[in-house]
Length: 379
Image (cartoon, rainbow, N blue to C red):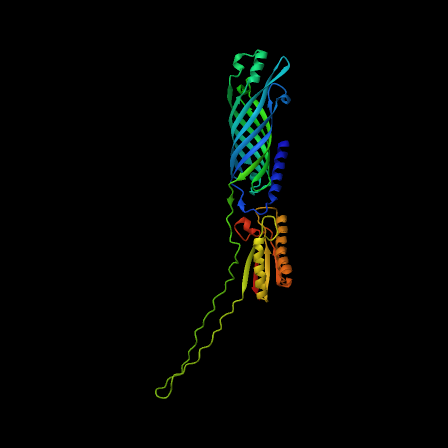
């Protein structure tokens, strides 16, 4: 029951988390490379009380998220550690230094449960393997002599053993490049590494907090949003051939008479204009780059006093919920209308508005559907 509840809670967190959207995103969030530093503490679970085996540790890592759901890193962790024995009911602890070098695989559960590619908070599972290297065993050798331990259990200079790691992490994205993380891992070490005599592996539980610096993002392909789109198509005017009437010719008495050609008036094309005002994610504010389009539209309306405007706003289906997207599209269409009316004096009677939310997606590219489409035409 508890496992089902935790699974459900994680799914809810990741789904709600996906509706939070990042403003001003002009890059692809994945893939990216990262480097990280962490500091914290470690407890070794062995023969004696864990409270006597707490030590400080640090970690550095470099890695890459290849796809939204999975990445890998090379992690170097360590500094000080402790182990010990219980002899005749009395506990003995000793210090030594160590480094663990692991290759870890990172699984971003938020991107697996809700693959929206941008999450302010990420929940990750960690699994890896590597090697431990330990040295500076003076404390153990002193204890071995004191307790008269047999020679095979004493250290010489250093030791190497395998390491298996399991863990989880929370990472909060502070900005495009910076993340803050909390990580808890359990590292399984060979019995020989801690000089134990019960022929069983030990677990070292590490808790660390740190910073991650992310780089190597790909720039998002720029869409051509700065120019007006083509006007509506019209049929070309058809030119009618002039009917030429001739009178019968009677030899010697009549001459041929040509009737005048009728003048064909070409169809008058009504002026039209179309613009697309794009918005950043989860925003109805018109950016500086898009304000120029609104100004250009207002000037065109003043030059064509019989023209009217229809504004239709949308939201992308890739983020948010239907209720949120309907609300944001409504705000987007109001923002464009208010700028035309309040800043440029376009009569509100000349403007009609619609908002579709994410029920319609005019563009194949998800991010381009954060848009208000403007169609203006002379009446």
